[in-house]
Image 1 (cartoon, each protein chain N blue to C red):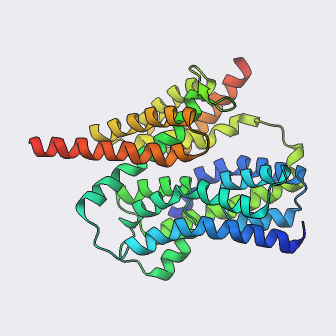
Image 2: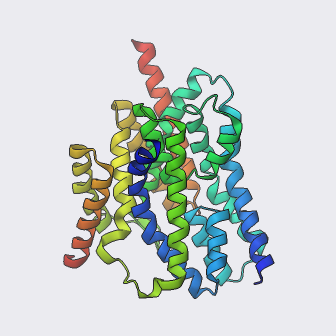
Image 3: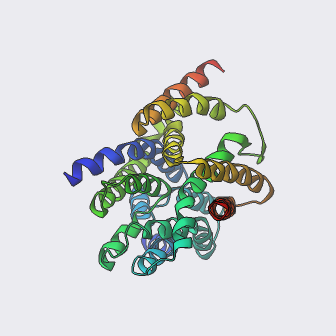
Length: 107
Length: 225
């Protein structure tokens, strides 16, 4: 592919990525949001985080089938306890890495 | 002050982005993309999963319109995040929001939402988080095309950095029974949805369904009191 091909491809991808990120914010930030919408949106972060995490902890990514006891899940338990205790974002990321690395060596 | 606090909030994201960016760079290089094309992609698109799929589709010989359409569907989930951010960015001028929106990713969204909710956070600090993450992403993906083949895979468990960060951000979000119930519902729905329906719709589908259930549970409890 030439420079122009890449430019068209990435500009198109950029546009369809940018618009869903920008339009709701540009529109809603200058509106008085109804109470129910604020309440509903308040539950979105916890729901999105769970939905991003859970399939990677409980499913095999190649076959998309239920898999319990994956190392990702086993490591998540002490990592979760560490997060509950310390509430440190960077620390939790590092502990998770360390445990996952050890799990890879021993399991 | 803004820069220091923004950096302190952003570094776990950067730590997680680096290995993923390297991996993307390696794959892109193997697929025949030159380093400048990867730099252009990370600058214009800035969306990890879509960029991985783009490289895979290029290898498979997909057409440009097909790749753009796929990107659109993968990144639709950001409409939800953008809407949720509007609660904290209300009244901020549109030029700022137009710049800010560029950097809304799963990770920057989760970090900034947590900070906004705890208070003591403003849109400038949030913007710094977005752009630091973006800078590291561009740097990492380009580095991947140049030196990535020399980095051993899975070194130091670095593949787990973002998972660890998400676990902690999830903990920050659990500020009451209704949040715990919503989180558990989203986890259960997403796992089932992920297994039954191909593609990425499980993220938006599960989070909207769980938030809606959580909302009605919360309202019913409020009405009963």
